[in-house]
Length: 189
Image (cartoon, rainbow, N blue to C red; front, top):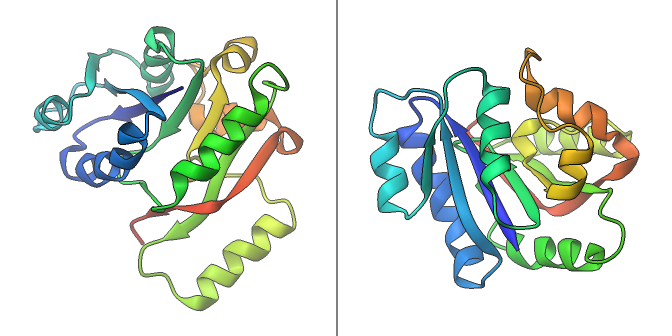
């Protein structure tokens, strides 16, 4: 159902926690594969990916090139882009499955992001993030992105020349076509 794509560069430590959070999705059959698109790591990123059973792709060029190359090889009809160090809330699988299943055979011209969270964040920071989401602030790449492969390709995928290809893709999708899931994606504070 989902191909998870993670662009890495010397991301050994951050990748471990992200992959651990994906285990429930794999055991439930939601995650079909995890693709690590690496930009030339010199640490043990490849070893971490291998131990976790991920497909490791060494991709030269920009981050946009890495993400596009991984998306091109993805087998599942839905893509989930995550950054190394992003840890999904334990309840992410159910809500993600509902989002994807509601769109099979229907509106695949939509995407979703997780609620933005930070590990050990203060109540004030949490309130500020909720307020920003409520007034329509543009989602951030740290929130992950779930998008059908069909819609991703129709948008032209990640730009290989954009300074921030993830933010550029979110901008091209548009706020109105991005659902905000209630489960959180946590990043280091």
